[in-house]
Length: 213
Image (cartoon, rainbow, N blue to C red; front, side, top):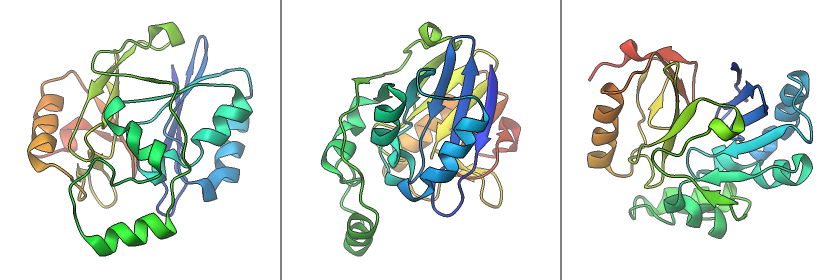
């Protein structure tokens, strides 16, 4: 497996393009306003309509899902995510399954950073095996940032963790957590797994040893 890290910049999430013996898998899709850059990166890697086999969303936030519907149509692929975050993308409300939070933040996000509504093709849960797509990896449930947050853990110890961790100035637990108890449990879970490298939703990849808890 080859991993292409696509850092789109701004408030857009990272995307990770995984090249397998059967084609490509894209983890997260960034914001819609970064679409041209994302498509250029896909093209340069040889990812074209017909060989993008799957889009995996780590959760339903707008900065991760902005190009999903477009890419599904153009590349004739499928979108998967955890069922608990389906409502976020189906309603276009990233606070759909979250606690009340700050009303001002909710209003700003929902007005200025609207989610393109779409229906995922099917849900993936804890233990879902990706071997049929040429990737020796499984889905890991990592709630905390959102109820339906997931990671992708490969047999070689690479973890694509969404927004549970970030690496803006240094590797750390995300500063935006919906349920602290669930997030703490997810971190403890990760520390028990065989992980070498973490690929966060924001910032550069880092060794798991960089996380201090």
